[in-house]
Image (tube, rainbow, N blue to C red):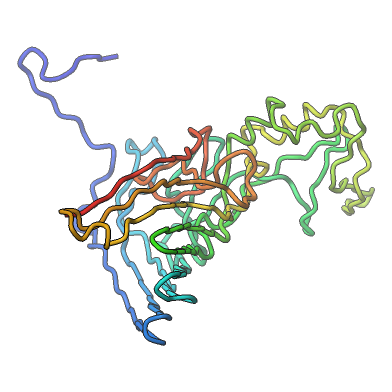
Length: 365
């Protein structure tokens, strides 16, 4: 192995690229957007609506496509296809109560986006955009949004789990699309209540749809540290599913599973096997109390003979309460890939999210 680094002994060196140069065939990426919207204020500003519809089509995205290493290269950079994003964004403001002593203001912020891979370059059935461990990946497939793919459990045509008749455990299936990594819609609801200088404000965030893979959950289950692994210890447990029966003529039928699991340790270990990710797939929907603040502002009559224009003191907290989630043990917002990579919906033993609480003093001259 040559471990020299350059410059070495006054000599320079150059390394060939591991990506095939595109030559003159590469086209610039092109994006076309149609957007219409309106902004309305009604009832002396107590009801407001700002709504926008958009349709964005992005063509000729430039992506590095992985190649077999036998070619002498790792990737080839080329234009890969066309992706569309259609959706609406709406902001609604409401003031149900508005007077000199008490005010109540509401803000609803809603967005819904439908992403579709319209087509890919010739010869491509799908493209791996980002990959993780255990064979899971975020992929682009024509007719679908960016989705999470990996090996799942073996199932029959009716979707029932096929059980191993010798062990009572689920059997390994094939690569499967588990769903879109993006939500169907998201919404934020902010309430602001003000009474004689005292203001209470809180923000609730809602996400509906999309899928998430959590390695933290599967690791906890494998090690027996998750609460759900306490179930059926020492008891007879029969997993839901079917047994495959083949007769002498080669015809296959299915009967309800009646084979007990011999070891719950093996059962949960199979759920978390490195090659199977389905047991770590969850609906990524959630409802969160994102932020809450409480403050008091001094009346202007007290400050009118001072050099201070406004003065307020308050406390605030963020990431306060996960009200509802379908992902056990973790924060469903966690994203292993980060902002530098394409896709989301994957969590790998990530650092837990934090709740912050603080106080502030604000004044103007």
